[in-house]
Amino acid sequence: MNRGIALLAFAYVLSQFFRAFLAVLSPFLKADIGAGPENLAFASGLWFITFAAMQPAIGWGLDTHGPRRTAAILLLIGGGGGAALFALATTPAHVGLAMALIGVGCAPVLMASYYIFALEYAPARFAALAALMVVVGTLGNLVASYPMTLAAETIGWRASLGALSAMSTLTAIGIWIWVRDPLKEPTAQRGSFGEVLRIRALWFIFPLMLVSYAQVGALRGLWIGPYLTEVFRADPRVIGQATLAMGIAMVLGPLAYGPLDRVFGTRKWIIFIGSALMLVSTVALIVLVESSVLNVVLLMCSIGFFGSTYPAIMSHGRSFLPAHLVGRGVTMLNLCSIGGVGIAQFATGRIHAELTPASVISLPYTMILLFFAVLLTVGLMIYLFSTDTRPDRA
Image 1 (cartoon, rainbow, N blue to C red):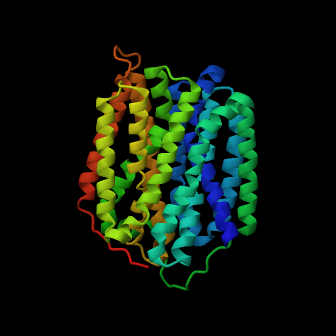
Image 2 (tube, rainbow, N blue to C red):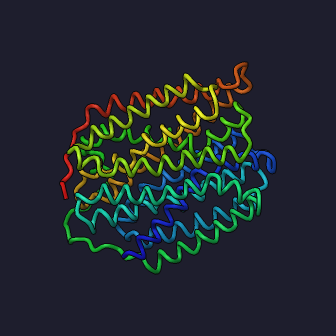
Image 3 (cartoon, rainbow, N blue to C red):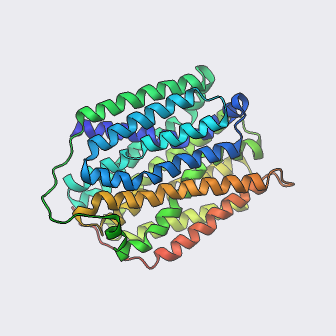
């Protein structure tokens, strides 16, 4: 089981990499195949939308066939095949198709891990294990920053994607060999997504899940690169360093959130306060949108840190799920999270296109940030009505 979990963790490193690497490749893809910010926003949105669209099928697959087959087959076809297609891309349309396929491949890996955690470990440990998996996976976010810039400058982005295709393929084969499906207690109950949606407590969690990661994922996954390029004329290495800093903040965030629910005996208020601080950081970035690269990067890091509530919100939602609904329940929560990023990328890509060129060069990014601030405010207001749960102190 340990070897299998390690392989799923590495697969999640790849997943985090693929959702974030377009930000640093934007100058190279613009020069080589004419892919501008709107093209890359659309391609990034396709990654998240296909990822989200797969979640119902993955929930069924986890509950019916187990995590081993579900994760291995999709990662092999989508991850390995999609990265190979990306390496051969000659137009922005090829990049979009490749990103959609990679989204399918990455879709099951985290949920496969969470499924194993939920059935093999005590509920009190779920939040810590979920946060640990996110922390490990976020290393992919770091590799998709300055190291990816260096790789693109030295061996080229096509060779880099070819290597990623090989790694995805080998990881999928390893998952097939070493992951062991957890034993499930016999039960007469058969879960459904309709049953998940009938859990009223989740209604007040879904909206925040939809909007909170949407901002972090969209900014780190794409917009930080064009923002620094267009507003501050930053070169690729500065963009790589900025995305690395934001990635480090997104590693530290889950580590900070992990134990807080047990320390303070609340899930709801840890999530609410952290999300409110992300909103404050967003408003500050709107005010200081053209101040300096340093201020922008520091505020992006603050957004990345306080916005790393994904495992905490997942744990809050998991606390309302009976055992026979774990697979479908966690994938439904994940659908909201990842789907929110996809929708946000399509919307923000349109905002950028409509406002470019602008008399004030930072205006497209001001409006993108305002868009996220409004969504987050609405999500927080709805979340106020959610039911708190107290984690076991174990």
